[in-house]
Length: 85
Image 1: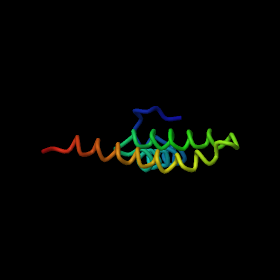
Image 2: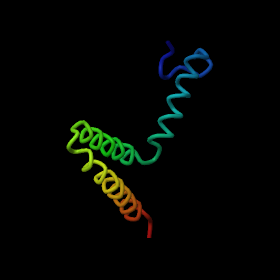
Image 3: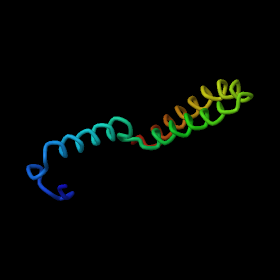
Image 4: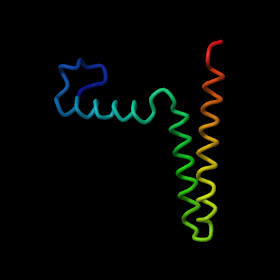
């Protein structure tokens, strides 16, 4: 396998394809805001854990939009705070 610092031409085609595939998904899912990716994982994980208990499924159905709205609000607040005046 080629080293990290190896020139592109030294990498085999399958290696270049795997690296490109990984870069695509990193940029698509994480991009410029990794905190949103982590927030989505936390929200989905929390709701999934609540759904494991049958008696908490209604709570999870109510909590999901609340958590998503909170994540969206936090994202907008952070973006407005970082905006140059």
